[in-house]
Length: 405
Image (cartoon, rainbow, N blue to C red; front, top):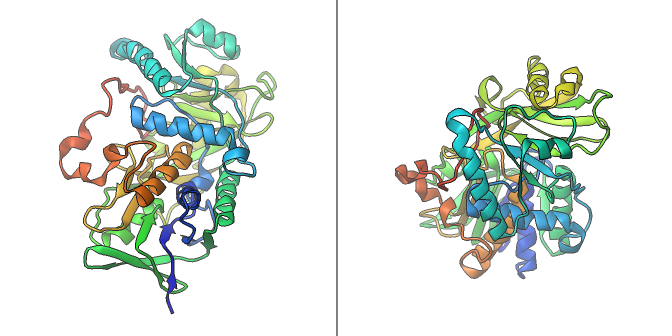
């Protein structure tokens, strides 16, 4: 016999469980979340979970701002603990040569942030050294500082959100693989799983790169490739502070980092040799031998003492990359009742709670009320419109981070 639900959510990462929780908050309690492994087994479990709000376009900046408020007040909005730490966030871009235009752009972006409720300050090199005395700033003319931003424990946040959804009535089922989406005519009818069919008039697909073959089988082609990306955990030298280091997305030097407990830093680098297109079910989850030294070299551009750090361990995960590095959100064209939340290109976790709310509003009210999701529609890839920047202030980068701001 078939199981029945009002909404089926495919994928037990932060996106899937956020959709489920938001639906229960809007009164839709007959929701089932299906995860083939364990919650946060994919990208959500391997992310650095840096809560950057710095985007040059309004929709993504707004999603990041709404989500940060939820992470900051997790006990009030969700219940439980997501491990939020308010570290502050430093964002840099190249500001020399042809990239000197980024300075004016950064000031305009900061003004936009203020309009949407984000506290962003543009700091001089001297001011940055005052905030973080161990850095050098010879290569930049300015940086963006978000005092309210920080980091979370990604697995704890995903699990806590799932528990909140379950308290609201959702059924969270891990170890259940969705093998097919069932479509009758032009409408979704449910899913087939390793544990039997589940009938539902609405299906939300939020399984990252693993979504692609499921969707292709019902005629929904999503241009996503799986990109293997690595991070390492470093033991900081004694000359670096044990705590108090801000989080960095330092595109000028080519790295990102966050505290990973006292004396430890989790860090990654930009693209190049350490970004590989892979099959999502067949890739090496270990870091390459050359990766740790590369992280130390990049970090030492900004923090010279990190040249003496020790690489403790690391892992590789997957980015679900779209051609324009912006996500695909909203209704799937041609299949009524089928919704998409994928293609986050390595920058999704920080926006998860807000995206869950927006998609739930779309199911219940017919459209998202919190943020207009029209720019994220899949149909943008049907012509060349996706090639256009989402903002006239989109930065030029001197290093490849795999995704745009």
